[in-house]
Image 1 (tube, helix red, strand yellow):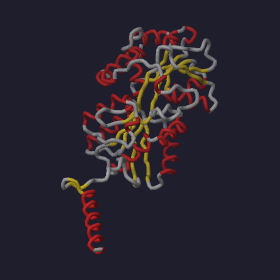
Image 2: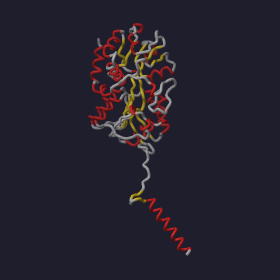
Image 3: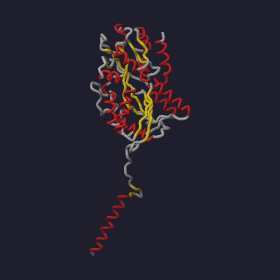
Image 4: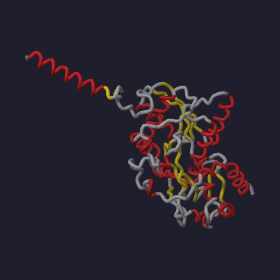
Length: 345
């Protein structure tokens, strides 16, 4: 009798286990892992970027310490030069980069249309606000850059708005980075040109006040530091970095609003090491990665759960002008031509 009861219990347990493993003839699968990159990143990846060289150098060192099995090689140049290099390599047969990280989103719409980007979902993409990622999943903001009004501390009065660049007190001591080589400048020129109360007349008045076209953002920062310029248009992180190193400079968030520029990173479809390239994006967008961007580059983070540099507003607190990225893209050449025509007179 004892033996029969034991056999009955064993059969019951077996049937219970069988039902647990299988339901309606289908196995119950374990949930898929969330991470999209390589579990242990390794090998070489090449990044083409317009991120300033000193920040790229810091990022390489920091990344190597965290991921010693990865060799991160970098080609650094202005946005236009990076785009030209990619176009030439594509024409020759294959883009040599694994990742591209330049200034602004409209360029990535061109890349998407050319079919050169790899679509994937980074591990923590859901943390990013919608404005920080492509709705189709091809690119994601690795940093936020804002075009603001910067000044040498000798400037008197201190500027507070875009319109203050027209003040005769600053005549001949004004600078604006050229949209010919800077993607951020191109977006800023187009934004102001299309904003009510500014338009191309604003740039004509800026030029009439002795405003100069400067070759790039770094040159604007250097000339503000030396006092060659009293007031200039510049990216916020660059002036914060210069100020932190003792340069006699500062900046304001313009009363009318900053030009708010999510700066995307994307994986190239023909990457020879796509899993490690994806893992790099995963890291960059992670909490750890964004904390590193704050520390290494003075950037306002793209994640709302990471604290930005001291004294900076959160994402939701930044007053911004309206930028139509489709217009930036469609009128790219017109932006450069009109700006050059004004400053060539």
